[in-house]
Image 1 (tube, rainbow, N blue to C red):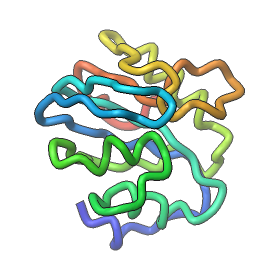
Image 2 (cartoon, rainbow, N blue to C red):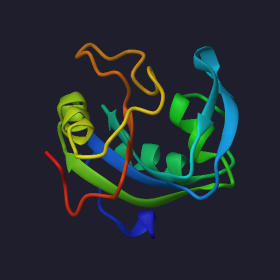
Image 3 (spheres, rainbow, N blue to C red):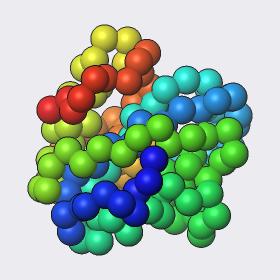
Image 4 (spheres, helix red, strand yellow):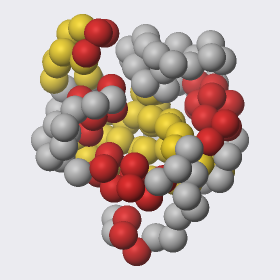
Length: 138
């Protein structure tokens, strides 16, 4: 995946398809100790500006831990399989996330993960899925 070659809008809603290759437990900020099981996860995020820089940051292993997703993406057991820009509108983040939650076999692995500032009632912006969906889920 060559992120630098992709043309990105300045802002938008995006999804990371993440593969946890082997399970592990870590402390995630105020959430506390959490266990990530082997499997497929989708993280839905947004950027009001600097979308490309946000995505590049997510894909780096070495970074200052700032957001919940950093605890996950900085781990050696974790690989970002793909990045999808869903919309140029960052306000679609919760709707897109809620659509992923409705997929058959989807579960919320960690309450509050990436959704501490959510105003739409999302339990988490990280969803564990049985398989990655084909194309965008809107």
